[in-house]
Length: 259
Image 1 (cartoon, one colour):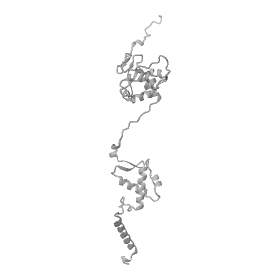
Image 2: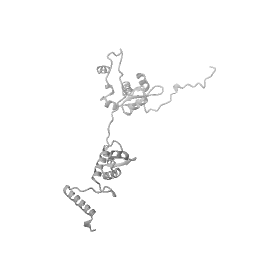
Image 3: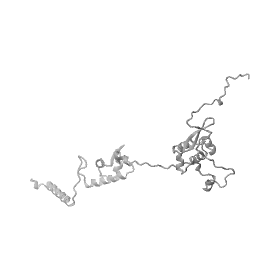
Image 4: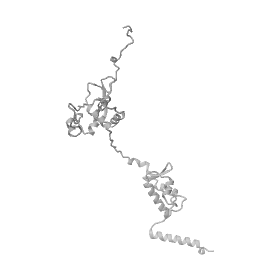
């Protein structure tokens, strides 16, 4: 049988001619294989690839192969499609990576630094923190025991730590009383946040009443404390070393029991 009489060869020749004619009309050529050893990409595979690309782009979390297979058509070659997509995205700003047996799109590590954004998250203070801050602002210099005496309840260490972390409250000094308790006061950051030039610019009784922050029927003799950021005579500098005073020590060992 001659080549011209072979129907299989004739069919292949006709298919090649038809393919060449279509390419000449549209100006497009069939895509080359995406990976060595794979068959040329068909129109069906192209559609499956587009589906995978859309799926990975919209995924809110990394996807395992079972989830991908459940989303794509049953005849989709998911493993080959993932390999092709990973190769296509290699070296680009976004890459397809496999982490803990799950696939995800992520920023290329070498350009991740341009996406760093610093945001200042507003903090909402609790009522306890607001009360503590107000007492410190108006009563400074004030000790923790004095804060608790004004509030009527114990002050949580976390509340004071939060106010100090926000840089609104600082350690001022030590009270000249037994135990030398530390005193608290406000900072320049506190003044800047509330638009105050000095600590004595805090609103007084009349201003608080006008703003509706005080009951109009305040008790007789009620006054608003006058805070001061000047070291008082009752305070010791915070960096002054503590000295053990002998005035609180009594030696009973040397006394005569008969006396």
